[in-house]
Length: 373
Image 1 (cartoon, rainbow, N blue to C red):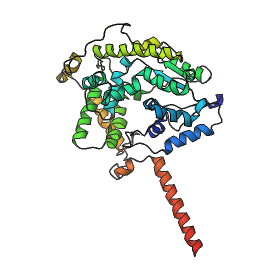
Image 2 (image 1 turned 90 degrees about the vertical axis):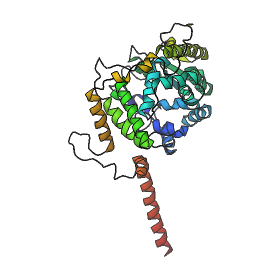
Image 3 (image 1 turned 45 degrees about the horizontal axis):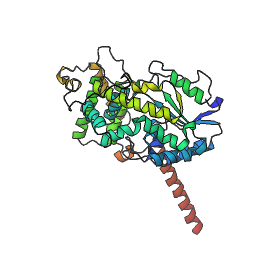
Image 4 (image 1 turned 180 degrees about the vertical axis):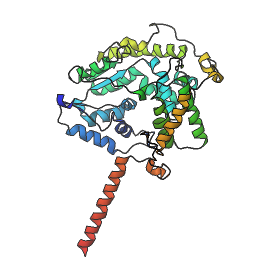
């Protein structure tokens, strides 16, 4: 990409910490918002870049309110900024979003969460979900800042995984074939048994008073990540979204598609796909009482946890603890008990920066004392 005049800004796969920092949002690893220097460093890189085209990517920017979105555009380049939104049907997002919540420490059931999302869309967890997944509002917010002529809506094609790569190659003026899909098991959906095991662990962690940063380290970056590295058998049940929720989500998708189309922004792909499989104009399905759906009460007693799931859960937590190295040797790693928990919440780069500043301050202070003598 660099050879073709495109810089992918940031030091990691996506600029998540910078996005959390500019939004002032609590990062699950830290238990608080990251230092502002993450955002400032990204802005400095963008401003100093000599490449004619720069890509800044993070899904977390979707959580910006009007003022935050305006600041992001202003500090990244103002009139130079072009916004690209990647969208998929909400009905296809529901299960994965709830699973992500559970992997980050949530203890509520899928059925409970769905009722919050559709019965209380303007408060609590419902408002949190729709702040990013009400696609027409999201598109309107960013279009009001940069103008529809500087915004592209890219539809994710579930049947053609390469389509999104070709779309961004065109937007960035890259040669066809520059961007290629990679196998990333960390992004696969979890099976019904896997996610229920994670939820049960969250409940036990909460009962024991385990802090959220430590839970995130042990569960999200340990157990869940390691479990998703295995191959799922065809007989293992997937997480199913109940039909009433799919219907409700699709109807909102049809509304969003019409509103986005009216904005006049560039659309790449089939915008009508936001309506999912529910026919346009179909009536809204009634929302059943919480706990009454067949999907919600399918017997927990009939669940069968594959042995590999249980063993991977344990090994993932062991590797995350730092007690052993993940190289097959079984050699001891860094014992997590030796490191104070306050330091576990500090990014290595931040820690080195503080050490360097204190060393510089110490040297400067000694020089001043010598000069005074």
